[in-house]
Structures are given as C-alpha cells and as structure tokens.
Length: 309
Image (cartoon, rainbow, N blue to C red; front, top):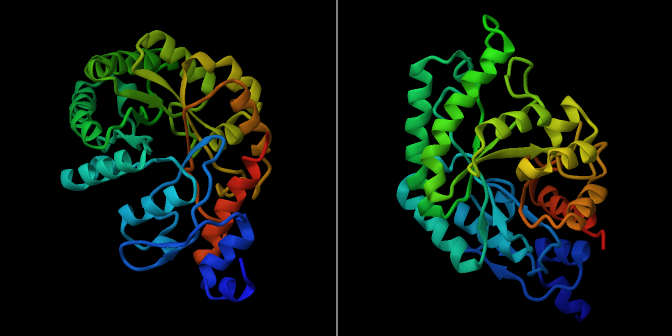
C-alpha cells in the first residue's frame, strides 16, 4: 500500500491496519461509519456482544454484527435477546445466517435470577421458570440459538444445602423436558458476583448436571467467575469437561479483555484448542479502553491471545 493511500484511509482504518496488518479493504456500515479492513477468522470461536463495538460500528446491533464479522468473529452472544421484539430477533437470526455466524447464549431470565427462588422448592418459582423456558423456545427459533443461560437464584439460608440442591434439580429436570425436544441447551452458570448466589463452583454444577441427566442441562464455564471463586482453571475444566457446553471469557481483576489481568488466556485457548473444543467462547466482559481505540485494543488483545499455534 502506498503511503499516500494509507494516509487517506481515515483514522480508524489506519489504526486497524497498524494493529492487525494484512488489511484487505475497508467498508462502511449502514449508517456510513467507516469500518476497519476485513480480517481473517480466529483459531477459536469468540463471540462479542451488543455495545462492545458501538463506537466503531454505531448503535445499531445489526451494524455491529457486520463489523464483528469483518474483524474475523464468527459468533455473537446476547444476554437480553429474550426481551427483544420478535421482529428484531428474526432480523438478527437472518443476518447471522447470511454471514455464516453462530448465535451464542441468551439468558432465560424470569425475573427471579437475582433473588431466592428455585432453591426454595416453592411452586410459584418453578411455574415462572417453566413459563420462561417455553417462551425461550420461540426466541431460540427466531435467532437459531442453541444455548441459554440459567441461574438458579440465591441461597436459601432456612434450608440445608442438600435440600436446596434437590429443589434445584427437580426444577431443572422439568425445564429440560421442555427444552430438550427442540435441542435448546440450558447452560448453568456458577457466578462470583455475590456469596448469596446458590451456584458458585464448576464441581457443584457438574454434580447437578449429572443428577438432571439431560443433554439440555450443561455447564457454562465462565473463566472470570471461576478464577475469582476457585482458581485451578484448567484442571477444574478438565475434571468437569463432559458436562461443559459453553465457555465465557473475562480477565481478573476488572472483568475486561484478555491481557488486562492475571489470567494466561493464550495458554487457556491453546489448551481448549488441543482438547478439540469447537464451541463458542463468549466475550462477557467490558472494554478496558474508551472509544474506538479501546474497541480496537479489544480486537488486538484477542489476536494476541489467539496466536498460540
């Protein structure tokens, strides 16, 4: 590329070329914002989310998806997909199909995820959960989703842990009966946000998945949360491997892109590649930098961490 031509590309395309090299041709999103040149796909299947690249692609999620595709990403995830209008769910699904991209998780959120609920065994919470599972089937069809996150709620201090576990297993078995015929997999996510949460570790989730005994009940292994709660990331992942269906990413501390914290993501991605993992790795984290430069830094961080071959 001649120097004069390079300088005329514009600030964003110029930064992209410097950061990633091998540029092909810059394009424009529907709102006219110039996007960086298209890049090769990654070794692993990383999935950005709505808003992660809004400064580069605009507020329209569809434009953001096009931008993600141009940068080499082949999946997305969208926790709030269930709450989007059906027409928008279909547009997202159609665009993903057109681009050859995959839909990652959305959240089966009945409104009870962040309070004491399924651990109690109370019928009202079970009924609400099952109703949301049924509604999730339509959403999954529209956007061709295969996985949906489930959080059993908070710990119930009035009941022994074994009884709470039994209540959660009973509810999840009934949810699996709804999801399994359509092939939608609920992935249970152990979290670190607050000690009040019932589901906290991968081995605890493994035990529950074994008890539910359904292909529609598996583990979402969020590396950020597991580093905060237990560490021992790769050995624990290997021990629970048969029940893990989905993986999410976030460095610690800070829950930002790889390379901003203490986790050796290049080593983890290499390990997953060697195990033959072909699934989605959801980028469920924030950006450490601001604006377009911060978004390009996220892409570069994934290029660096993905460079393990």
